[in-house]
Image (cartoon, rainbow, N blue to C red):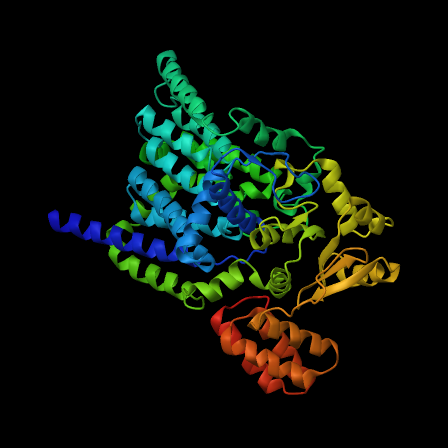
Length: 565
């Protein structure tokens, strides 16, 4: 018996090791969201001001306005991390949180259902569903805290002060604490021993946690923010791609969701007496799945919570199947293919921070060289900038370039400001007048997004705007009346400047010199997506297809991105 127990423990441990590698392999989502940048900048601002009560330091449209920064603690953690280990190391933070989140989920599923195989299968399903949303943002703290809440309450009780501490921290990390309070109600409800006494006890514990969640810089005002987002259907900020229904085009997509959204129908199996006898009824899992499915059908951002809740609901059924098939007895043997599968998924991806950071944050999509030029020349003022670049400007200039609007959305800006930006983005007939009416001294825009090339041409044609600089991804114009340094200095000699020179050479029809510059970029940053694509295109233009294929193959060896062409 002891030998069997020891063998079972070894099998379970190996499956947890396989799980950690599997969850890591799902941590390579590429996403060009700008939120990470302004979170880093906000953490720096908190250290500079030594206050958690913040006003807007970075926009000219709402400068000095109250900022509902309900994620201030995440910002402090972000900035502290990069201060210690560098910006690129933020990918390690992301991977650690992902592994901790889904390993915790795997643990609680194993604890409650006794099947290490079922725990890995269900937690693996959850991370696969969630993977497209696992970017470098505070929202993954809500996934981690949801797992911790399950550990504390699923199938058992815990001390009230521990739950209160969890919510006092959670509320300052991410707005998902509000979902946590709803999940708390489901987990505290006396499903199996219903009585008024038990219901009263659950209510009192919940009330303590609500009061604990009020321990944040904005108090109960923080509770109103997610409610407003949920019920104000007129808010234009709900048109942001990440918050759309999964059935609407655009934004982040989770292909697996459209398969697993039907999986809750398996709850009908719990109606069978034989299933209830051997698996019980996971009331908490049923309620959590129903809640998160309704949330996910409204907004795709909640799909990861649905995947985790579905794992709780399905785990008893999967565990029952594993017992019937005696799979858990072979846990150690099954761990081998599980480990091999996890390693197979990881094999194409780098564990080194620089290439991983470059792709996971879409570093290549930001005007790095252009901002090097801005910093070198001390250019400051109000800039009408591309929405997704706002956070990057905050990080690079610390308010030196103040924007019209950025990704902080309705925690700062109102609907009119957002609608005004959308009109410019979509090139409404009066878009130039809107920019000029804003009072911006500069315009910063990408070449190939939001009609960038046409916008550049149209603004220059007015005679009221003049070119300042352009790099491989964007351009900067200033009003003709704006004062600039008498002698503008070239940006520092970096691979990013070589990439700019190479791109401009290609646009000027000088493919040969462009190749020389881009080869130099790849000597220092062989994974650089912009350099990879530009060099591949340049070789193809010269009829050197074998060289183009070799470059593409080498680049994909650093990171197998779908954006390498």
